[in-house]
Length: 214
Image (cartoon, rainbow, N blue to C red; front, side, top):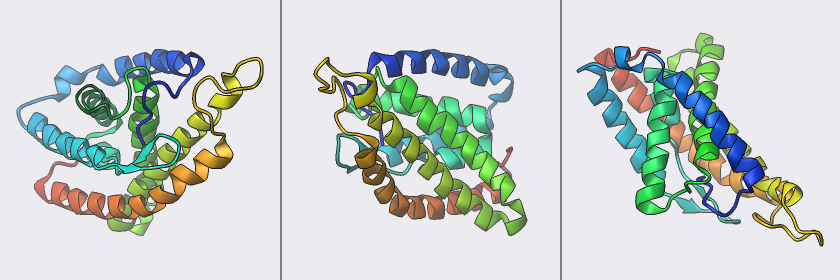
């Protein structure tokens, strides 16, 4: 669900870059103390998994795409801050190397997919902890993906309202939320089932190995 360059107005992506900068600074605080010879290879391995998942893209109507994220498993194992930083790196590399997503849209993508996705995953797991790890982790991954997808759909859908010519012609993304929300959300309901299953599998492996720190 990467948003590419040219689909977002400056009124959207410039404030997002500012917010993302603050979020990156917050996430990076104390990072050096956390990274050690055991954490780095684990984080690198699961970040590579998220990177690979993001490259398996299903084209969706309106210029975006659908795919699993891998943010939830990063957040549940390493915490929100590391997950956000790691996924921001994933987005940057995908934009630079493959044109998946955009540089102007990087702040929006990082916040919607990385930060919000990580926060929702951790919150949902805690909320449903009484149901057991399997249910809680599966719901965390599924709901995290849906919330991120909804946010992306809404951000795209408001573009015709906030950036248009005097005659009403949209300057950037032309479709409203009545189109973007179902076009983005419906495929991600199916994608979310797969992501939930994968997240549970990786989570169980990480727990057996003693990797879980969040």
